[in-house]
Length: 334
Image (cartoon, rainbow, N blue to C red; front, side):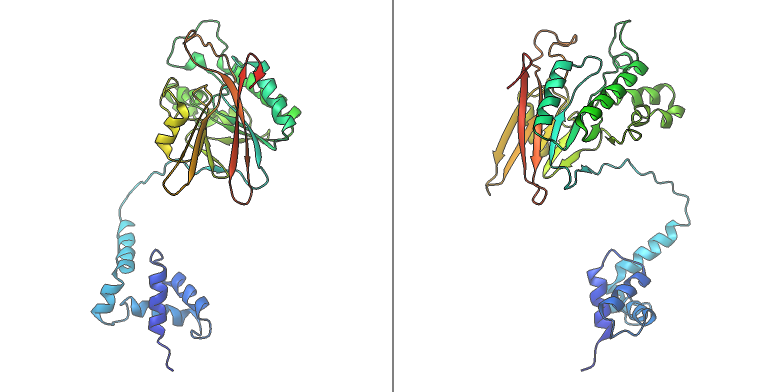
């Protein structure tokens, strides 16, 4: 039986609509049918034939006009001076199979960290044998470079940075596990300030450099990215919940915004919201308490804040997770 080589080439074109390089398509064709095509050049000729590049019928040309048009489009574009800018990488930070039990803390707001609550959380995580710590945003406060009025005796920027470096070194020494540092809206204040006041110095004053996180082997996750711990998304939350005081149930607010299983910090409140759809798929969202004061100066009487943390476990194979969301009340874990 005579083999229709053009038909085989046509199949490869249909299977790979996004590939426009003929030599790449020819390699795919040759690898798929190594006995039928003697070499890459023969395969390339068959590809060109079905594209209508070897004087064949107009019908064949119309069928595979898209690759031909793309080649023309790209060739013409090269003649023009176009400066395209790429946006920052927003792909999630993914925890691998070697990290399956995490202590999640957030909102330390150094130097306003409640050290007793932080110590309780670290002790709990140690006893639970966590294999990583996720610092989920707002480790620093940076009040003196915010848009809000600060007191003249507030701790200055470089003092805060040195303090958090020491805090991280202490945690790393006593816990001896992987630490991932996720930036929050307060952490971002330093970079925003430099961009406003001295943009030429921006690259030298990024927070991960100032904190020397790479030297400490602490992974840094920018504020506009989120993390994936199995099938649970983890983010600081300021890009999801707009404003620290809203909504009434933060976890439900996260659910309505994301429609995914997501855990946030940012709101300084412990909450949980679980729903299932018509197919029985269960989705859970969570917010955790803070590691700072529950009576901040900007809202000392009715903040509704609480201290807390979470222990999150995941199945390395399935990605299924469990969240144990803990409150700290009067320096006791609830």
